[in-house]
Length: 267
Image (cartoon, rainbow, N blue to C red):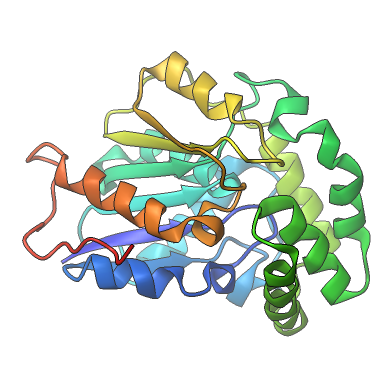
């Protein structure tokens, strides 16, 4: 059985996937779907986050090794900052990766800083990072990353506030992650393994042009959702799973997994 490892973005942890992991697992019964926490988040919230993507990768990969998740080549599905970690992983250890799906990510040497964090979100972003009220912090975040109705975003913020109270990511670790993302300039070498890019035209945090810049530089496939926000797993989980399913089915034999029991998500 292959493993599909999920990587979240800035100041996020495994719990922020919500029901998405179970939904994806139901659609891919012959693939073990596992979420990883980056250092300084989730079950590692008391650890210090490195301030470079390369070091975040090494810590995350070592944990995956310890958890027995790298006994066979893996698939990666990674969002935003997680997408940078995934890119570094497939560049450094291509033999471990069967394929990767990168969602709404960006590179410092391909996009402007005001595209990687849209200027319209600056004040909300700062307020979210510095708020001492867990609910207000998470409400500000969910309003940046999701285009769902505000009544739904308030419900999500309550659940995320509980996560923050249980496993708070410190301001220091958030700043270190921001620094790592802001400086990440990967080598301009096309990856050796298949990579699919996904973005959202309704993303109000990161410009959809950032994924397009990666697509143009490396000549990779790019699929776009017409109106979802930055958090595709939250706003369009069925679409995201359908994209993953179609991608896995089209992989060349050397990168393919057992596809006999792949299921389309209920739409």
